[in-house]
Image 1 (cartoon, one colour):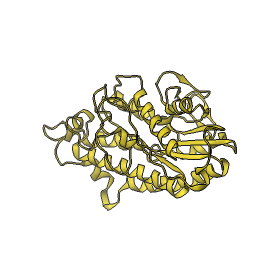
Image 2 (cartoon, helix red, strand yellow):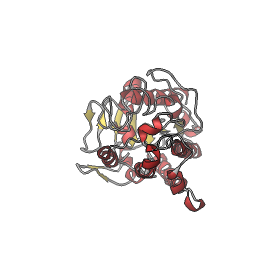
Image 3 (cartoon, one colour):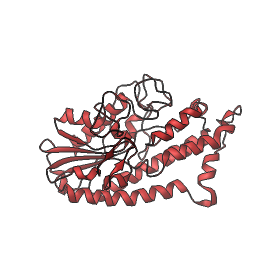
Image 4 (cartoon, helix red, strand yellow):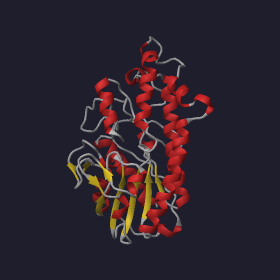
Length: 320
């Protein structure tokens, strides 16, 4: 995700959250111990690949990289990779050789072109792939739909209604009204564009790493569908929390469908993270709020969240 947007919101003192998704909410987990459900849709051409032989390449944005998590690592300044992120956890668990080209702020375009971070330049992420690659994970798409900008706009539109006594819990949804004005859901339109670009990217991954198992990694649950006091904490009305959660679900659904169409796997990190969103108590959340209580970038997975995502990936690989 875009950390500049997060910083701007922090300066304004507005709490918010970012992407997530799957196709449906599961039962709410309890406690902070990660549990995971890995959903895979693997084509027969890659199903027989032995991921324990060869190399693992991790591609993606900040939810893959792990900004502000200990310990920061990586050759490219500004990408904000951590050895507590799920690529490193998966690599250690499966004893794989890891090449991590994930980078904060990455979009699908960053897969095939260099990304300037402000502190360095990350090479095109697909450049790490080869015929020797046996495992690829890809977590991307949130920056392509401009999710940070969507949340900023929602907090601007919802600020006054959310401050009115009872307003946050009312049926008001100024943000939904804005993004669906004229009968067209602008966020859904962006998601459709993402789906087309991701499909092209998955084809390129297949060409560059023909022997690899490929898994698209969905986003974890960031926003509660039922906000309660969270609506006031975020400065977003209950109606718009529900709207944004639905949009998040649609994004992950699009990622899942593209993976299925390509004959690749999809890892559902949303279902196991339900009840661990940024509005939960520090002991149980996977996502840190605007003012983190644990080391992590605002509105990004903490170490428990990255471990939960790693468990989902390992489970998916084990059943793939």
